[in-house]
Length: 78
Image (cartoon, helix red, strand yellow):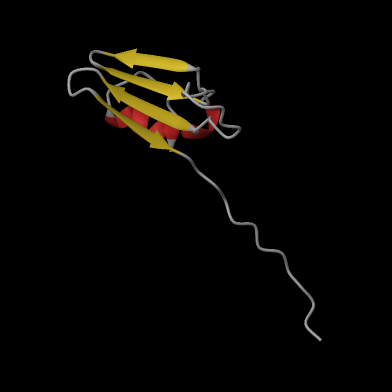
């Protein structure tokens, strides 16, 4: 997902998604993409690190993306 976002925003990446090693910060013009960075808040929050943050300085917006994968295990039924 990080690779696709960077490509869509015109940020230079590798040719293939599976060889891309994300850097903590990418910047292109008015847009900054942060990878695995903590968000500073007024109160203490233990889970304060979304996977991707997209900051648009021109529009003064931030988009937080947190991903999770469901793991299905084969279970034996009785």
